[in-house]
Amino acid sequence: MQESGKNPQHIGIIMDGNGRWAKQRGLARKFGHREGAKAFQKIVEYCYDLGVPYLTFYAWSTENWARPKDEVDAVMNLLRDYLNRDLSKIRQQVRMRFIGDRGALPQDIQQKMAEIEEKTASFTRTTVNLAVNYGGRAEIAAAARRLAQQARDGALDPADIDEALISANIGTAGQPDPDIILRPSGEKRSSNFLLWQGAYAEMIYMDVLWPDFTPRHLDEALAEFSRRNRRFGGI
Image (cartoon, rainbow, N blue to C red; front, side):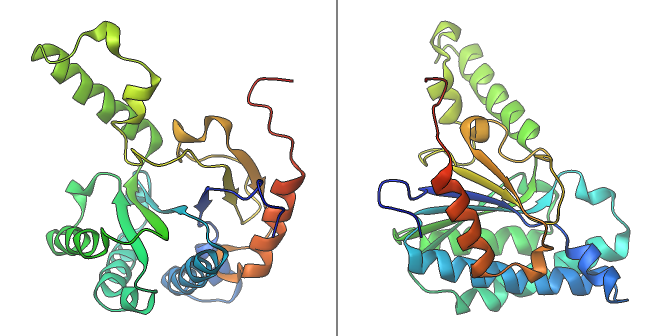
């Protein structure tokens, strides 16, 4: 782990490569998502041990609905099973939050998300944001609509809208912006993930498919982060 003072407070991870992992093994894509869920759990546990306060995982994007129906159904069933069973395996000190538009999700999944958020709300060591039906542009647009409605109602002067107010109206409100956005799988793009919050995040790309991602890979990413000189526009 890096030296004290350079430890990340918030890590964003794009869980990419599940389908390719399965294809390489001659398996249906749903098996890659299943293995990816196992990797997610291992990394949450490892970050808990490291004392990372905030994690945001990109699980399902607003664009992923365009995938084949059998894959969409498999992912929804996997999410349902995870929320109902596997989540209990994660240490009880982990606070779970879900960001994104829940309206398109099955009602039972929405209800379980709300129950888990309420049950874990008092835990403070590590907060895990799971981005489901999430898109960075949609998140910013939703914040703009909320602020516009407040202005229309006379509760807000448009001249008072600033970056802090927008940050207070997005899914990660009250949390520090990510220090790192990590993408495995060899792809090198943000894919609409944390567009507002990630303005100054260090982008780290790794050539490993998400189901094969281990704590060793995270250590490598953290070592890379420790070597970066973060100037935030300064010198």
